[in-house]
Amino acid sequence: MTEFWYYISQLWVATFFNGIYLVLFCICIYILLHRPRSRGNIVLLVAAIALFTLSTIIVILALILGAARIDDVDLPVPELLFAANIIFGVNNVIADGLVIYRCYCVWNYNGYVVIGYGKSDAVCRGLTRTDAALTRTGAALPRRYG
Image 1 (spheres, rainbow, N blue to C red):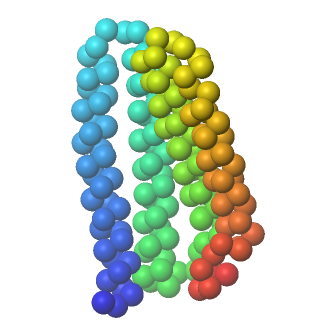
Image 2 (image 1 turned 180 degrees about the vertical axis):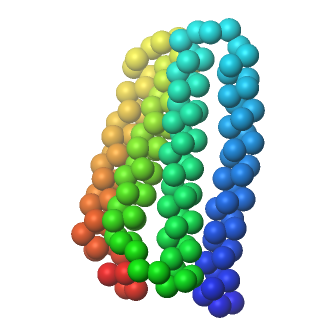
Image 3 (image 1 turned 90 degrees about the vertical axis):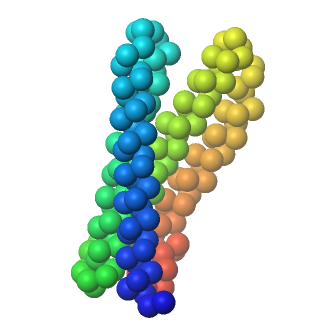
């Protein structure tokens, strides 16, 4: 398989799964808007919108980078990868915060239950920032872009 078809398949898979995510997002929004208003539903609605928006931005950046690889367009790849890593990290923080909130609600608003998960989430955030910093400096880039 040539490099061209590898990049095309990457782009196709990314857009395919983003399309599935769009359908699921629309169903989620429909359900959350037709439920009684409560604090829990508003948290879920805001988190769903934020997660979908950030994920779509990441897919758009992946499409831009993939199309640039195919056509050999000169783009500021390290900066785009840095932006994608930061957006990915923020997306993970929101998703982890949503899981922590749901655990907090399920366990009868007991704060002790989510302490362990909060600690592991902090480690994940630190690793994401480290990865973004390495990408920013070019240390984690493939040889083609470094």
